[in-house]
Length: 353
Image (cartoon, rainbow, N blue to C red; front, side, top):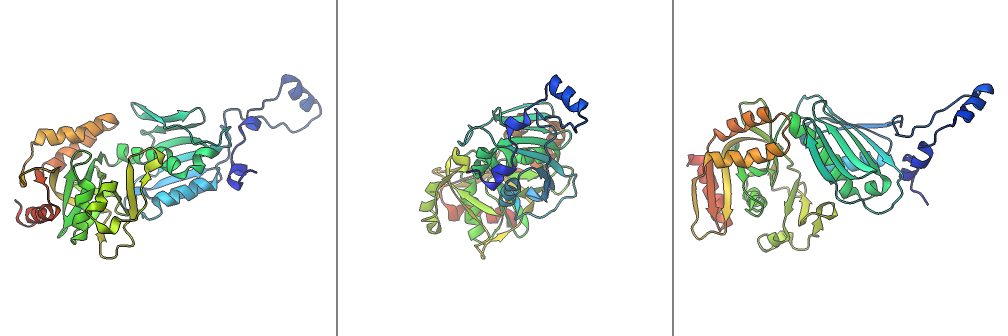
């Protein structure tokens, strides 16, 4: 039995029917109304509409399935509008499809202003960063695997457009003390999420644990992040007892195992979706000697440039923003004890060294 959402999805077999010459002639001679087929789904009515604000930027969605809006609400329902930018426009069509299995992991490709994310012939996105728009087609099976759909199609398309047009992404956490924010950078496993959470538990304001977006065209080094969730590797249970018993998941069913939970239930933790960066700190943990030292500015620039170069649309504007950010100065925090690291960051914020 089909679900309600599946009934509202497009039936590809019916949509691909085309009338023969004889059928057209017979209908014309009988003066019957003629309704042409839609073999490439160009005329599918996207009658469900809503606007969401991931990271504070407006994203307008038009779709033929209300389940798409339910998924968008899960991803972005906690965000409110913060930036008066032109909306990113997404048209998302859902077809019935031939399979009930989750599609494979999509393959991403980009050239100039166009970026594609293709899982198979029925599940793909095409985003035009020059226009701030995207077309997404997925099957009902893909939509039923909600985490997969949200991560690889919905969030990927919207956030890539935001990053291309308004705010380049930086692989970093962000916390603030006395309204002075520290951007925590480093490789996977350097401890960005762990130290961000530890700082938040110690009274700092939490903005993000692993991904920040630097707003174009500002002088205050403003970043925005997802302050509504924490995400850890399962090994973090040994550091934070409150994580014991929380379920471990794989993002979209294929990512690294992680523990994810919302910040909202933690009333003692202060959050802010934006922060003005005063210091940039690269992390290196599990070292014999703990120290805060200078970090080579060219290396920091290359660290951020490699993300820009993987999605090069508007790269010159992005690098201008990054160069202004790096003018704040860059440090490396070598540590093995969280309490020491928090204390040393606090000294940096309050004393500037």
